[in-house]
Amino acid sequence: MSPNDEYNRIMEESKKLFADPQIFKCTCSNTVCEYHGKCKECIALHRHYDKIPACLQPIFDAKVAKETL
Image (cartoon, rainbow, N blue to C red):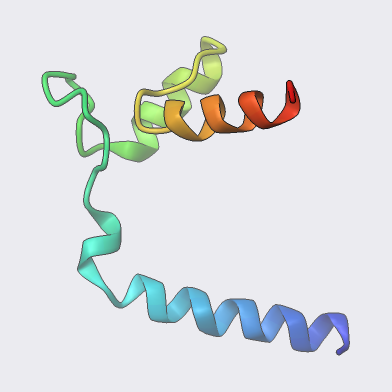
């Protein structure tokens, strides 16, 4: 499979995902946050302050746990 074919496959999968409105719902458990539902702004702020948003914390914890084994 050429890199171009792989790219096209990924783009087709992405388009199918983006067609589903459920994919855009905020999964963060911190519902009192001023940025709840504004994921782009939330991620930008957390990246700036070198912290992990609550919605990504379980993924981070699983990765750290896996690496410490």
